[in-house]
Image 1: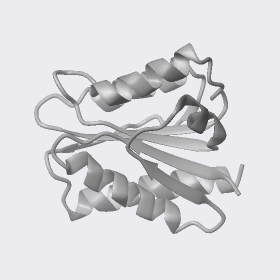
Image 2 (image 1 turned 30 degrees about the vertical axis):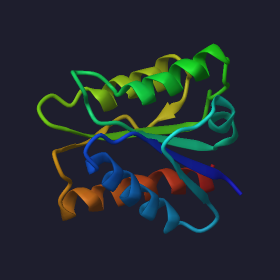
Image 3 (image 1 turned 180 degrees about the vertical axis):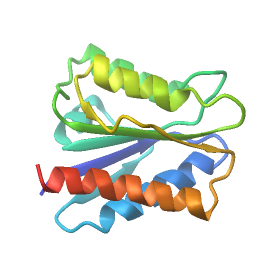
Length: 146
């Protein structure tokens, strides 16, 4: 069964709400194992068929825990080429983190990415959470049909 990994960091709980909604959407697709984690080892990334990263924007950047995961995966030469990748995150004023993560997934790891990052200003509302569920469902359907 294909694995979809949702890896996130959250400073205020907003990105965590988004992560849970992404997972709900992915779980609506049968035939996918959905794993939601706050931290992963590089090998766990390699074992997944798809990875959705979530990070709030903190000082115009992704948070240090997410940056650390990506740097460790790079150092360990984790093979993610061809896997599906997507990103989401909340922000207060600038919102760059998801775009930065997306660039790393495409350019460093060669992942097939969902090219539009999902961002939410502050706390996601019902419409925002619906978009998160849709992102999870879209990625899950891609790995089931791959």
